[in-house]
Length: 117
Image 1: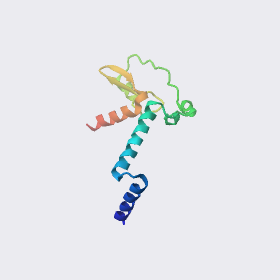
Image 2: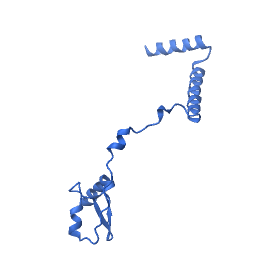
Image 3: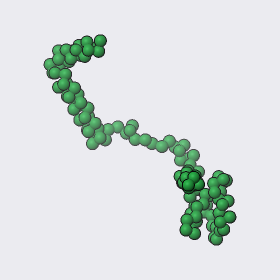
Image 4: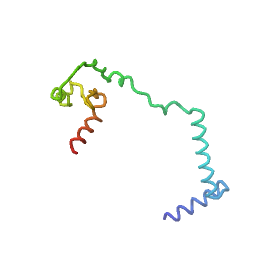
C-alpha cells in the first residue's frame, strides 16, 4: 500500500510539474531555506518575541533590606540554615559570611550534596 502511494506521488509530481521527484523536493527545501534566511535577516514579525506579562513584575517581591550581623558565632550562624524561610540564608566560607538568599535553591542543593559526603 505504501509502495503504491509513493509510485502515485512520483507520477503526480512528474505529471504536474515536469520535474523529477528529487528535483521537486530539492526546490521545495531550497525555497524553505531561502524563506527562513530572509525572515531572519529582515526581521519577520514581532510575534516571535516573548514579552513578559505585566503581572510578572507585580508578582516579584522586593528584596529585603540588608542585615548587619557584625561578628557571629557558629551556633548563631546555624539559625540561618534555611529552616525558617523568613530569615536570610547565610553561608560562611573562610570566615566570610555571605547572604545567598537570592540563589536559595542552588545553595540548598549544594548543602544537601555536601551533607551526603
